Image (cartoon, rainbow, N blue to C red; front, side, top):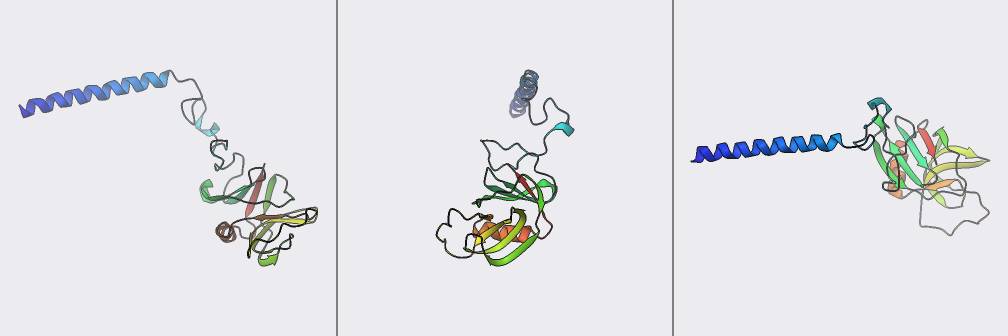
Length: 184
């Protein structure tokens, strides 16, 4: 009887798999264009290369943020992405921007300083500069010591502050000439 029950189990399993396949096909046939997945209704070449950033995932790499190894900085999201080869995000983190924002566009790292005094008077380290806005240097940096008092409201600051760990990652990644893409 053991051989007979194996045949019955095999037959029932085969019928169940066939039924699931038919139901899956019927379900996919009724899905409107654009809802069937990332490439539904479009050719693969027309599909976005990066997931769109939205309210559900503010950490997703922004669309139209360039290609290749680069730093991406969102001035409205106060977020940075370190993007490696093949557009793979190596790290993303929040930052505290200065009072002067760079305009959206493409830049590159132009200078670096291991330790300086920031435009707000605070000692900073791992400074990675990439832009200048009306004489104010714009760049990423990490506080070198404990937090200081807020700078005078009239001081135009261009330092984009990072945590120590994020600043260390930026310092290692953003060498002279590395592209920096600023997005809204």
